[in-house]
Amino acid sequence: MRTENPIEDLLRGLAPQVLGALVRRHGQFDLCEEAVQESMLAAALQWAEGGVPESPRSWLMTVASRRLVDGWRSENTRRRREETVAAMRMPGPGQVTDRDDTLTLLFLCCHPSLTTSSQLALTLRAVGGLTTAEIAKAFLVPETTMAQRISRAKQTIRRAGARFDLPPPSERAGRLRVVMQVLYLVFNEGYTTSSGADLLRADLTTEAIRLTRLLYQFVPDEGEVAGLLALMLLTDARRAARVDADGSIVPLAEQRRELWNRDQVEEGLALLAHTLGTAPIGPYQLQAAVAALHDEAPSAEETDWPQILALYDVLERVSPGPVVTLNRAVAVAMVHGPRAGLALLGTLDADERMAQTHRLEAVRGHLLELAGDPLGARQSYLRAATMTASILEQRYLTMRAAHLR
Image (cartoon, rainbow, N blue to C red; front, side):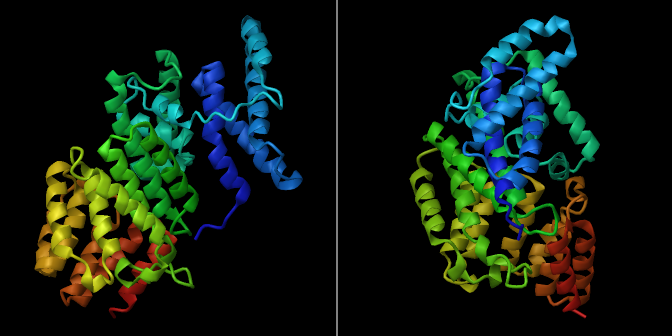
């Protein structure tokens, strides 16, 4: 599990709040984002030696505001008037309000002038706190490509003259979909990191849940927002049981269920019960319902796989895609036998979207093992291990292969 760094965690939570406050005051999203990044770097260096200030948010606001003024000052004399106005607006120690503009910042990053991929990338960077490398991994593109995409997105927002306000009702539905996608991606990156030595990053999952709660308070009648929050809670509830004392991955079927967070399970179940049947069904509600069936089962053997398969049948109609088919193949295997699951899995072999992920080979290895084909399972596990950048997943898959010698 990721080593805890209190200062890094504090900065990650404060970054979108400071950026939101700066953009509200000054506009110029791209310059504000750069200033906030510089203030975060300064804080990481100074606070580690001198300690965290009494009001860290005010400290960051002051430093970031000064960076903005310095940037304007260094451009040319034509900007003198803007520099003066900005300096007058620069907050003093007691002038920073506690207002959290994170939700408004989320919607700004999902501005309709941006493509969907740029909306996702910019929000993951500015609000989710992911590095450019992490975002590039999530999108399966080179880091340089992602850096250029984020830079262009900031320039586009500036040219569009976007106002720092919540979207009007006519735009809300479309931008809400993107916001939910972003929060889902942030949560997934935290729950199973795409690279490195840690399986999960609790800072990302915690922030994704916090932001989704905020979104749910804003639109309490949106069934898919409630479904997304329920999905996160029901999934994150298993966090403590996902690795053993040695730090090795523990698959769902082997987890100690007494370690699951029952408060989160109960909250997720209550959210799901409240929204199902009261709003149009969507993919997040369906995924949450699958998670609920896993969490409610007293043991792996008592899991209601026929009901899970029925939910995946609906999900594949509502939101078809290779990941849904991959998960459905596991449910088919548990209900109709591993060979049936493998047959469905084979339909994904020609799907280019699965070529950059190890999940297909990992699932194939699991189903081949269940089907009594240890040699085929071993080969699939080893292929999967070469396709993931996660050190823990590499170790887990290699060990599974070694046990099949």
